[in-house]
Image 1 (cartoon, rainbow, N blue to C red):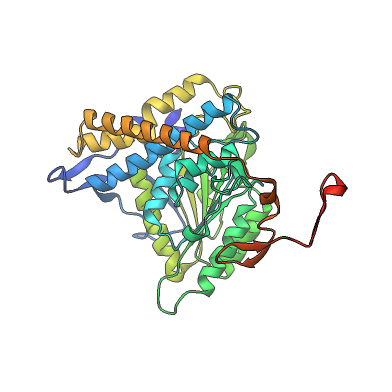
Image 2: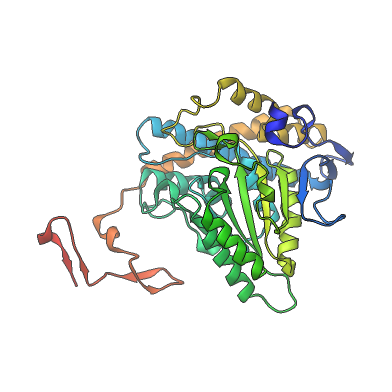
Length: 398
């Protein structure tokens, strides 16, 4: 059942094996056989079935993924303690997708995603304190308490945020790809744009319209479906007439990637980036992944799937356990060292949570900033000439 759900190799063999390991400080080659399925790509064109990675690279990936995991678990706890209110969609279980994409792209590439955006914000120049602070609604939050859980943004790192409307980020992503092609230097690879969205959004008309234009104009656009197998509480076999999402672009080539294997995501996205940046047009990417929490904090996540399914995925396909096992088998680290890393990160996350809690709430004057921009690059703004307050007598007049 689990193997068919993920549509790739069987769970028992879903791990990388070190083919060559010289020393704990060297590079090893890891087998990725069975990690990819291809659509509309000629023979010989696609990701490689092996990838090289160093100890430092794997350790960096593990540290980022474990920080993501601890941050999301903290969000869960703080939400239950009523320190976080409103919508809150957690990413734990899907960490290998954001981390692998981040490893393959560079900061000049544009990235926009759905409302499940905390971990992408962290990968694209954020800190735990700023992410958690935004959820707490404090002035030092990622968006100065104006965005909340679903609206992070970092123009310096070309991260164009989470989108609170299902699927709405995809046409914006196509626009970013258009801008990247427009601004590209002749004869050089283009910067790409990636829009991540869930399987629940994959059948929307606005996505096909964006894909059609992207293909007509040969935009360097990556349509990335994070297939966690449930659109809110509805399984893919009940909400979609096609389950091979990487084929949904019709004439647009596609790749299905094992999204629980960070090395497969990195290698798959390396290929996709090179393909799109070379002027070949867009590509569909389907990441086979899984979320441990429900759709949002209001969803227990156990009414439409049983606890045994969640437990089986945790025990056989957890992306963090995969990286730990890979490092141990390659001789890059031992279990005790990895435990110490986890202990250090738990302390760091907790310290940043306390830092966020110490930040003040924004003053009333902050409500009126960033409405009329005077300088886009610096973020300077001016007050609008009139702001109507609930109490008319307290309205602002310039």
